[in-house]
Length: 291
Image 1 (cartoon, rainbow, N blue to C red):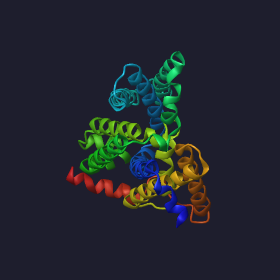
Image 2 (cartoon, rainbow, N blue to C red; image 1 turned 90 degrees about the vertical axis):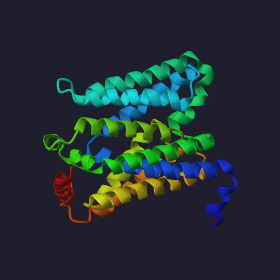
Image 3 (cartoon, rainbow, N blue to C red; image 1 turned 60 degrees about the horizontal axis):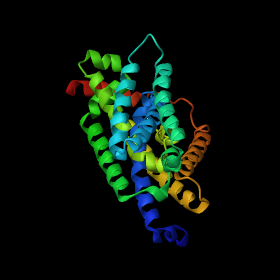
Image 4 (tube, helix red, strand yellow; image 1 turned 90 degrees about the horizontal axis):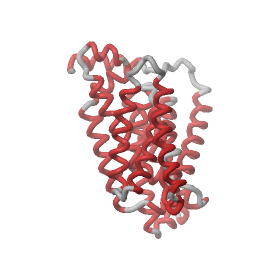
């Protein structure tokens, strides 16, 4: 018990642990749709794009969240449009857009080296830098993401598994995809201080793919992913404190360890799982009547 309670004497750890708990659950929730939509490359690219906006906001003396949010939402809209193009591969086009934004941030940092250290937390995560404002932002974004997914649950569910058919049935897939991209951008911006942009994509994807190995039920998948995201974030925070390493690295490493254990366990089970759960596809079809 002393091992668990000792860090709580420090206010920075209490704030950091709460931020990690919220950010981990948020990443777990978003990660389910990222994995099932096969959008992992978008999450990775968008996290790098947001970093460029963070640096620009600092240079222009703007509030970090205002600058990063404006840039992140713009990048999300551009990426969402790029993925609709067929002439150029989406992964290649997204790579150009996001790496250009990231390179802009690196160029500005190298130009004014005096504030290089200020962005270590944004790159790698840092529990020492979590403030009350960060907690409020993470809480607001978590509520925003939960409400957005709740109110657009049916449309998101159906377009996730069969976007073309959903469009035929009148689902506004373009609007739904844009909304989800904005939610993803907001989640990345809110979690930057805890996870770091270089590792946040893994923090989003790993809990979801781990949960996917354990269940075919969509509702259980969402619950398990949120639980795993929060659990690995909390344990990662303790590892960060006791091992004196970046919080983002410790969270992702522990999440990867859990994934490896679940993967080993699942190899002894029946290998007949499908990529898209049959129960989910059937449920999505049934929801058409209510759209």
